[in-house]
Image 1: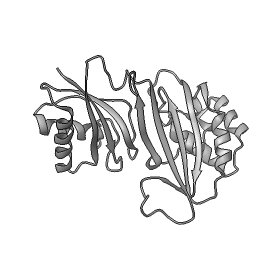
Image 2: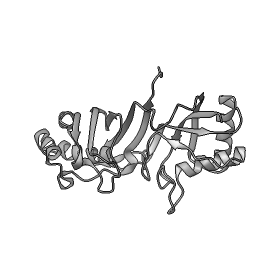
Image 3: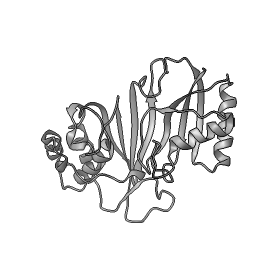
Image 4: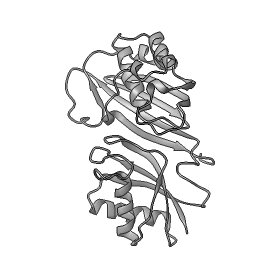
Length: 251
């Protein structure tokens, strides 16, 4: 069966998350419903990563096996039309025909995420449900210095959800940068894989550093504690974006 790699954008606000669940409508269900409407095929798609309710994506990657050959641009356009008719907040940005050795999840070399904080006294109008609104002044340079203490290969138990299903808390964090442009603070994270709530846990802890409630040394001590109680509050989901996935052979 022909296999197709799709790059997907979605607004996570109306969904219970990426994965199909009994308690509500998911992004995975939206995509599978669009394929069913278009082709009449009930397929199971695999994504590069799971996102929680309210988390957005601009570069999620999925793969699907279909029974017929499609020109990639025709599949993209037709599937987008069906998603729009269904009222879904999901868009197919790109489709590529791939061989059956490609797996959206297991072929991934690195995943990239962005967390956005608007740091200002006035509430968000245009960016509501698109970023974390923080009114207390944050020092992004201290946040960045604290973030660097987390880069590398570590036991990230402190920054791992109690409900995380990963078999090991060990991960290699390639990048965790904090920058500021005006009122917008951006936290960018890159790794081969992440633990459940890891980036939102980072963001909540780095916010405390930005407020002067933790030093970079305190953040490193929290990591070394390997204790969930040492983590700051988990940042809300609306600030998190799944940016991009790297695969072998990509430019």
